[in-house]
Image 1 (cartoon, rainbow, N blue to C red):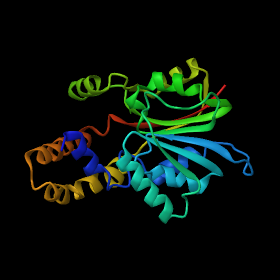
Image 2: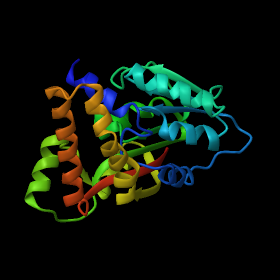
Image 3: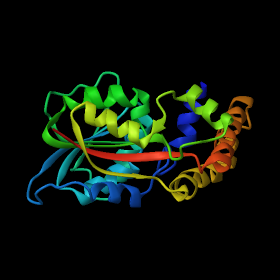
Length: 249
């Protein structure tokens, strides 16, 4: 089993595969303005096992194309959608964010929580714009500096891991320069990282190690995730996910 297989196995049992919460999804949805009687077309890119997808399906009059690269996540999404009585509104699609099989102006809303980094923020907002109808919406959460100054070690870490990290002001300027108008912004609280994502993940470590017979590879995956959690706990005052909701001009 490869390291990627192990990471998928660790994460597929979680409600979410990254920081976020139902509260955050609902807050971002509050910035949208769709006629209640209009059925809209939605793409949820990097949907994972569907923590936010199910909320979108409950709150919107929509057909949701839920896209993820990993079939293991999509299978769990199918199960959860069926259990919630929402399978007729959610259409899982295995695809790479590098090669999305969509038509121009296909969607009224593109949603992506914690996943646009897979292609990069600026590339994502540029390429995804073609799939949006005029006047429709883009909603993405993206790693963001939340202070003007930070310790050298946290700056060096994120510039190495994801050089596109920047303050919200720069992300908003990029949106505006690429033909969007910002309609809402906020950043995720520590609860969205710790209570909603990291603590449930950490709770699953013993069962994960047991499933993989305490293998060296499984232990490395756990230690890598523990280090990530500890890093966030130490430096959470300096970065978070910013949630950006914008309308295509």
